[in-house]
Image 1: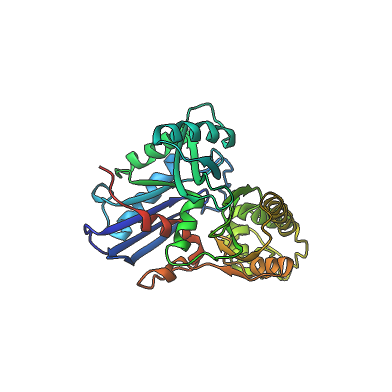
Image 2 (image 1 turned 90 degrees about the vertical axis):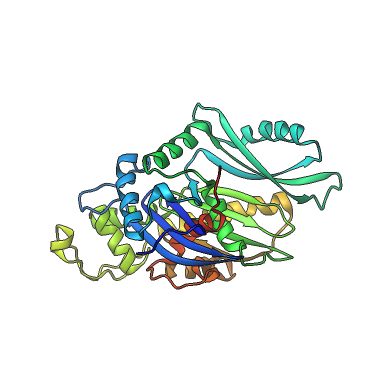
Length: 363
């Protein structure tokens, strides 16, 4: 248990299959991690993964229990970072003429509407000037982030139920990236490809110091590997998740699962050699990189950095390294912080760490 202090920062990542909570103390420009908790949203053997995302009624009790375990009262949290994830959001770099703030905001709002899958509500747009465009002297590089009012209001409704005061609300892909660039330099030449391998989708980001920021959501993610195991073994979601944790996303040489725990027997030593989800992921990544190269002329992918619940998979790291012939790293976000939290899957916390680093009070 630990008490609440004025310099406490909380990062809350409500994902589609798990909730992650990171509590840290800020000391100057350093952060010390005090606690890191994760809770799966689907734990019972008969529970089915919801492709539309978790419902508020399931999320709120779990988050409150996590705060209780952390020894933090939600209503007293002054510095909170939380995030939006899902289909109705987008991030994109654009080039624009340097202009007064009011004209800039109007022009960016017009541009943002082109990149958002609308859900019928109005769009919410934020932007940040990255710097001068190295190719055109009279233009600026601007990073835009856009979502919908309906999605934003739904997120605030969850925070109200938790008695949390909204602070920084980021988009999930940017939160992951922030956890890396907070302490790591981007390359002067070439770019890094970041993959946030979540449950429903994989966020791909291509970022370099001098090159265009690029993002795309890929339809192949953790659920794809779980579904593949469920289909091949005719087992439940919870059994497939356990197999994936023990044996990896390709589930080779599956060991016997305790029948009493699984609600049935599963054959031992099954070899699932079909790597269809991996092949699909490779195709999507390769297609995205080829588009980026065509648009920018940049072909120097220096390495891959992996975040997310499936990022710790050695199978995935080895496969991508072999197919793309570049280093692939599963990222531990706690390496940039003081303290040593006891967690089984550090890459899963990249978003929550990025949110804790950015958390500050909004009055």
